[in-house]
Image (cartoon, rainbow, N blue to C red; front, side, top):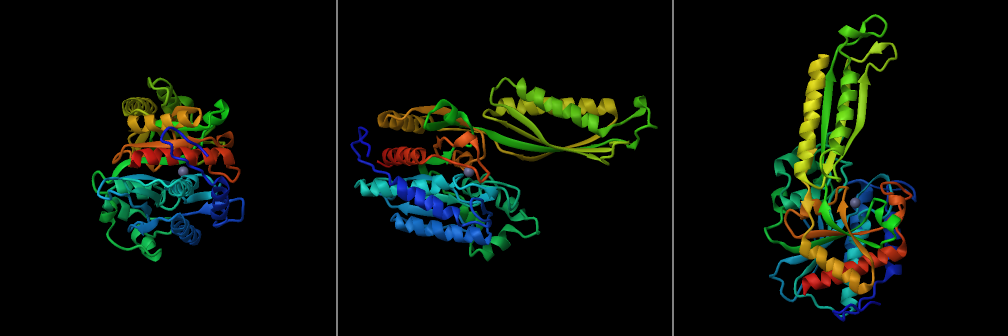
Length: 419
Ligand SMILES: [Zn+2]
């Protein structure tokens, strides 16, 4: 029971929330403790049914849009006002855990249920969203539901998405029972007054600092690129060094340029990774004639990320010209960073202080639906610690006390925003 100065007495049912997290974890394509719920799989369908039921149990009215975003609403006394939103995702990559995303959906249901028990009556409507396909497993592109809601992806591009079996979004959503034009997924301007997502940190900072709540001030913008390098192969003994066009060495220079550019961008939040580096033919006695790299470049600032990218491209062009290598450099995807809303961040911070919970302002470094919600609404994310910073694996763990604290902070924050 907590009583910050709003004198709203909110009691989170931590045991009930944990039980529901455990129940939803069993809705999986793989045996426990592994959680796998890929978009529009049979487990995803059962997960959606669970979410609808949990929403109704929390006394919320459920609607769904044509891409399968689920909205659970508590109508405010002034329903014409922009609503206050919360929520996250329940899809899970193969071999994942039970907390990523799910804490933000079931935690928001519990926050609203606790507000109802406390006798709170919102002026603005409160709405929990379960976003479709935050994870990129099916289509290779994440945050599909929130991108469409924010208008950050064109309907044409969404319709061109194909899964590994060549099935389109329209085919798969129809099979899952979703119809209607994708155009209507986009939120009308000013739909949300504010949006607050609850999520596990997926990083080690809160646990290491012993701080229960993180408040996101900046959401890093991820980008990724593929680089294909065409050199000239030959016998590793016969082709002498002065006449070589070794594609792997150009690739090695590019990988080092990624590291250098990220380290010297001027922003401590620039991170650059070459996570894929393949060479052909891949034989010890053969000069590599081809190299293929994928670069991941992220930053909380767009200017420093763009500068780092320009430096990487420049270094790559220079290395390829010098080595007689032909290069193709393509963008796979680039999303700009987003800022947390200062007023909403300050509200969460004040709530934490009043509840006697230490909090820390943070940068969100993974993809979150909030990256896209921040384009159409004042937004922040409430982080709770997770063990060793682990996520996307079955050992993912968040302590019951931290989950309850996160839901409690969310409840108070939503109450203030909806008043
Ligand atoms: Zn997530």
